[in-house]
Length: 427
Image (cartoon, rainbow, N blue to C red; front, side):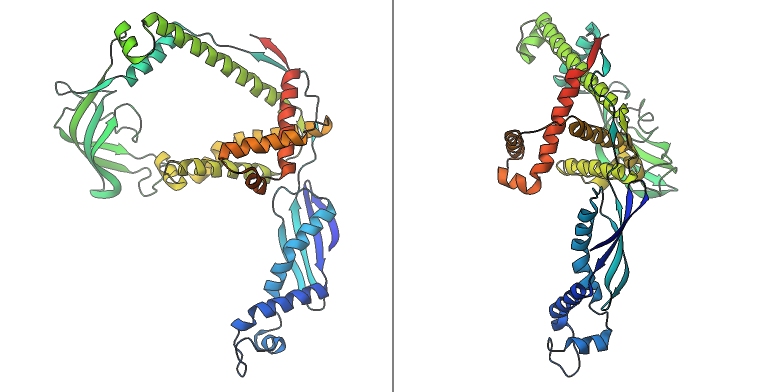
């Protein structure tokens, strides 16, 4: 039961919780019954030793840990509910006293959802800017189309240059000793792509097919493999092939072969149309982002650091999940990109802060403006999620509580209300 509730600092409470001697004794007895068959006492068959005898042999507290573990979860949950706290992370629990005469006493330090105040979010002023589509942009898009229809041609009458694909053998040496992960054969590398460490690709430029040579580079100071970070190394190279990309001519014949159009002019008109639609979509997305920034600016709250950290954790977990579908684990991805765990967390930090603040603001808007969602709307959202993940609706409801999804629906309604009330000026 909850003994006391103390506000020790902003958004942090310390609960003193007690479990009665009777409840503790019952838990100790259950722990004894569960474990007695595993305990050997001379003179007794396995599982037949009396509890008193086991406690005399191993100490009175032999079953205390398991008994406490079986009790404190429900006790904390009940105390948090009685204290009317909304937690943002599991509490930090410390047992302060335990014994047959006193039961169990412990403290639970709870970090709670912050108190939120939200200013008026109706009439937020933003500017919509639709960037014009230029001829250069159209040509650039068509250039990509030509690249997709290009062919690779072997080159043997000139040296390698940026933009070429080269096929090479390479092996790296540090202080004259080959290092792990520094060797490959018949590796294809696009020069100028920046996919290798600085200085590597640049020193391949100017060499010809059949050349065998050495290049000297220095690994970056923050390179993932610590034994190579900041180290000067030598790579032995053999250049097998140089390939250049040959683009098709942009004429009506190419357009007929590669598209559903008949002429270059028709293709350009269609590309321009799609670019203009994209520019409009991008402008609308920027408007919504600016409106949501305005919502965040109306928020007043002292937000616990753990809420930001939890959101960063969610985003990294999501990244790991997406990578797993590509057959890559997070550790390999970090090694490939040269990213440290600290650097990865910092990458997501700003975005995480915005998401936490925006969600708090929108939920407060829902409360302030009494935004409601009908049972039909919630059920429709369950159906949508079920279809998206190809799962039965009832199975989705196992993972998502109806009250949580109802709040999500209300938040989406809040977003639409705020957007509808915004004042949008055109640049």
